[in-house]
Length: 149
Image 1 (cartoon, rainbow, N blue to C red):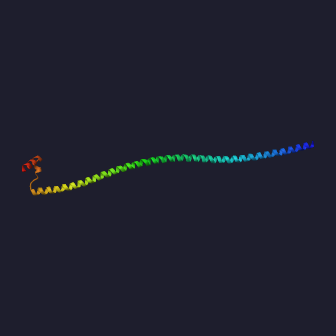
Image 2 (tube, helix red, strand yellow):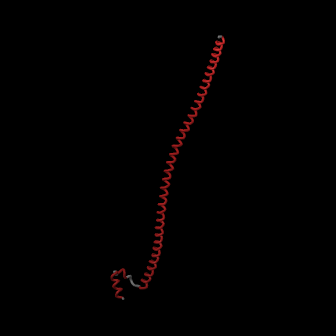
């Protein structure tokens, strides 16, 4: 019996040692889990801040795409206006060429008219008579011309 009592005592001692070791292991595990939890919380905070920044970048990207689209629309409008203005400029150049041609013809005709006036003036001087157009009507002059023929 003494052996049995002794054995029971040894078992109790070893059981309490195992229990103490288990408590130490639980404490160590708990510390480890709390440390891991703190690290994971810090990592989660970092990921949340990255997520927030990514959402901001995403919103900024969308706004920039909208701005680019608006600028592209304006560019297309301006290109259409440029084409329209170039067509107007071509029409204006054509009109300008016509005006210059007309001006040249007018200058030429004015020169012809001045020459004719000079010839008429010389003829009037050589005839020595008064200008009958001042004293007679057109019909009277026509009648006189018929009588001369």
